[in-house]
Length: 562
Image (cartoon, rainbow, N blue to C red; front, side, top):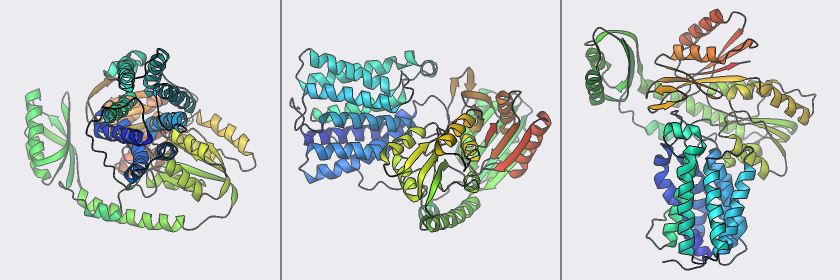
């Protein structure tokens, strides 16, 4: 049973327990994400954020003698620098505000906690340009309001206080679907709010004296989002590919393909491979499987009809080629990092993924590329490291993803010896447009104004695949479907990459658009990309069509119209 005060040692234990509880629940929280895209999920981002601080707190905890100032510095600094994604940045700001409220105290009581909760919420809301209710912010605010109410009514028992605050915050979390229609449509609560609740519940368990494993890995491991954030060459080389052939084809059905047939066919594919996608649509079935014997999958499929669009890739061979290429890129990256550039007035940093897109940015004069994007949001620490490597008085940062902008802003606030300008680019095409519109003869302020104006005129579309079944934006989506994502939602869904892409572009186009730029990803053949470009040229004869290799993973095509 806890006491009615919390000292530094107990607070450290509560923080570590909250971090561990979040880490244990991260995949469950990831599943709450509304959009069925392969992305940098909320649970993962929040966990990586809090664990960056937990490593520092754990080192203090193991030493035994902890003072509140050192503990608060470890929580605040560790989470701020380790913050990833919007949810991670907001969580770090909650910790920052909270620690401001308690760092001067030797022991924490109910009134001090209530004030610290309010300071946490105030700090987090200020960090977000346009706070949205129905999110982690709302849940945090609900807890703070309850804390103030209890403190003002004279509650002094910490067990009662914390229990009621957590219960009320949980009630607020359950109301988030009523505040955000997209949550209600998907039938889930806010994932960031749920992540915060797991931190609070873990901390409360520690206060109550429950036995909790507080072990925290001392080393962070490779950081997603940094230049060396991918698995090392040696680790990749040792990775085993269980099924060597990526096999895809379409069955042109000659009989009714009912649910039982579909289930039997999937079961057969599962017996010979993995990564299985079977999408039935009227008279065709799209099939994807990783297997060691493509012939067995083909023979089975021939029982249902004729086959077309057959494609078999040797993943082991591609894996070795990719590893060789990675090793060369890592060597070149290390060489480049060791060579400080000459001091200049203005420098540029861009977040990018894909060797083709990286080369485009470098060709436009970007000094440093931070590897990262939708599936691996770089941290504030990654931003700070990049800033250190650019020898310029003024540095423009292009996040190129809406989930990275807050981390860039946080890095900006921590840098004192250089002027950092974050251009809030939400997509790679916006970033490219921003860099193109930089004019050396103009001032930093004038260039900032121009860039902000120009990126607003860029419409972006991205083609990827669905990782789960869902119903959103009025569309029924099945796992394995291809999706065309626009700036404000899902614009097309189907079983054909080219078909989905053409429908996506059609939804993006307006009469004033003059240029369509297409960046094809690592999984798209150049011939297929050129055929798509030709079809776009036929459909939009008054537009210039630019086709470029992007090499990006996850997204088959990234397209801009401006």
